[in-house]
Image 1: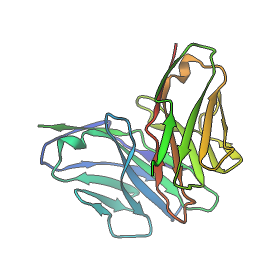
Image 2 (image 1 turned 135 degrees about the horizontal axis):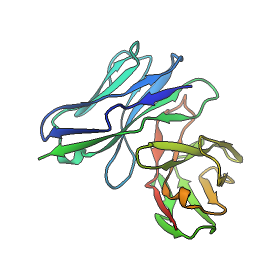
Image 3 (image 1 turned 60 degrees about the horizontal axis):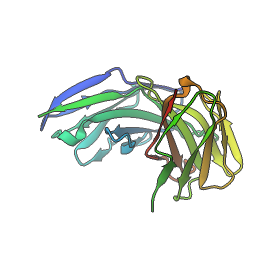
Image 4 (image 1 turned 180 degrees about the horizontal axis):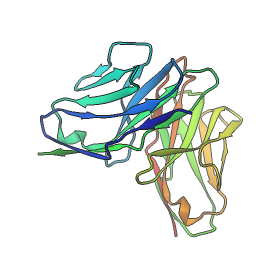
Length: 116
Length: 114
């Protein structure tokens, strides 16, 4: 079975600095998607970025980028020029593309604090 | 386009009472999910549905029932609420994965069982 591990329960970053959140996963499959979701205090889960496993190029969305290391099964999120609004829980998630599978596997989350 | 909506946003129940949480999506998604979120445990899948009229158990299904009579709606029922069911409940939906793999969430329902 697939698993997703976020080993950092909490991280802090100074405003305008860069922070990297870690995520590792375990799977025997070759085709899958990986996601980062942000959950601010409002509790709304917001999709931040996603990565297709068969694409070697790392995904980027404005100040958010990922470092996807398929062989190492690592999928870290880098937030550049951190802003106060980035303070939130961040969840890493995995979705298999194997036919007949419908589930997403989530990590336990990393709480990011942004210091002014 | 409202996306995924949930009703109610907050509810207090007494032990043994029943209630139904409603999820609606207007994105024509095939798949719908119910999760619960508890501190330090991330999101745990309760039940899910891959199409109208079909449901399946997730990771933590005990004490819950679901129904999907219409493609756009997914109902989560608690027949006899217990304090252990105090949690935040999220509904989510997605397309058939080969079309678009991302999952979209509702705003959550906070449930307190006394």
